Length: 116
Length: 114
Image (cartoon, rainbow over all chains, first blue to last red; front, side, top):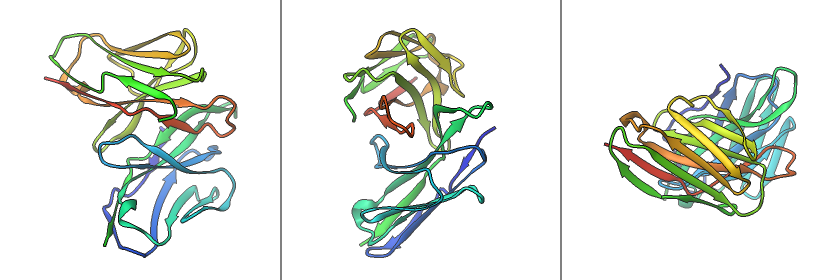
């Protein structure tokens, strides 16, 4: 059973601080990794994706990937109250023959609360 | 919402009744998905489609069927709704030609089965 694990939180950080969200995955063959933000009562919104080891930065967001450790993280710098949401980690499913599928497995999400 | 609409947006029904949810997209994307989202379980794939009349099961397909007779529409049917199917249902698409299989979601349908 392929799995994606996240701490459910809530993760509480003060406004202006760095929020660090973490995710581990079980399928060593996975190649693409995604972070979605979901506000309460809304649909998930894609904010970052990464496929190479290392860091990928987009504005205040940085995704970090370590395939050897099967670990992906999302850093949010200068956190704002508007960043308060649930953050979902998703991982692409690879088939046994090594081909990528168009299926994703999602973690259960981490609730982030940014305190003004 | 990447040109995706879902209908209805809210529905209350009774146990044993059939229910059909519709996902409509306007941009001819090949891949479409149905997920359900429940507290403590996250998003779980019910069924997906990789083209007209081409569908396959996801991890929680029991009690659900799908149909895709046109590229733009993907229908999810609960043949006989049960209380355990109370959930929020999301449709998603993969942008055709995208290299990394990123998915984009519709606004969701909240279904309550009494």
